[in-house]
Amino acid sequence: MASFERVSPALKEILLKLYRAEKPVEIDHHLYEFGSVEYHVQSSAADPQNNYLSISTPLLSQGAMPSYGLSSYSTQMVKQVCSDAVEIVEPAKEGYQLTLKINFAKIPRGKDYFKVITQISSVQAVILCSQLKEMLRNVNSQDTSQGKNKPIKLVYHPREPFYVIRQPQKITAVFPLRFKEHSDVIIATAFFQELMDVGSSEKWAKAPPCTWSPIPPPELRGEPLEDLSTNGGFVSFEISSRHVEDKKLDKTVWSLLNFYAYVKKHVKVIFSFIYFH
Image 1: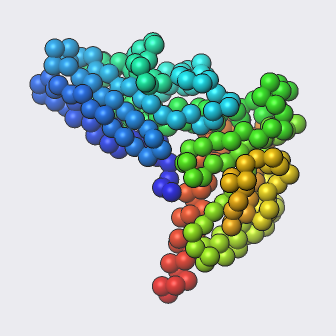
Image 2 (image 1 turned 180 degrees about the vertical axis):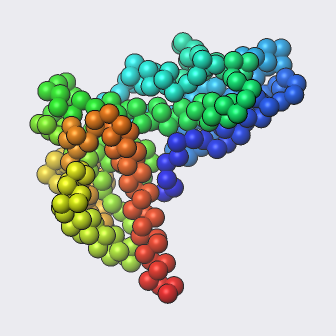
């Protein structure tokens, strides 16, 4: 899978086009992206200052999040990212989790306009990251409403789910790994062994402890067989409170969401080095 991008290039291009237009533009455009993400951009020549952006994105977890719409935490994260030119429309338009009203007249005409448009184009990433942040930020919480030790299945890519398990004073993230080629399995297994060795060294003592096993960890006992059938084993990370403090929370969330992509990229690079040198 490709790395998870913070900014949607296609959405950014459309918003920049609208912002730079010399005369009002009539647009009613649906944009579809990886992971069943849909954007709906609307602009009317009769009301050029008020443009609407609606977003539909699969929830990271069906069991730990509201059945539809955004949690108050996710909504707050969106408000922090967006500028004064953006207003959250409530309720969102039918079929979408979020609708934003964008007033281009409030976006500065200087060099800062590009930064503002980029921030607006990152809103889907903000929604996705906020869902995982909400799970991780209270790592020391004793709240058992979601069931302590019960795995929560997270799905960003349909074929590559991972799990988080809340345990006393820590949260464990588990990634089942699958590869199409046997050669990839060999390379990945060596990489995971190296990852454990490096992670146990003093230099990386502050990083989340990492373990790899060819069989499912006990925490996943009882999960669907199709999710536990792998040829690359299972990589687990133990996340404690020090890994989610302040700015570390964003870094930890970003690393987890991109772990599959990082592994696939590493395997591809090593394969190319071995077979083409």
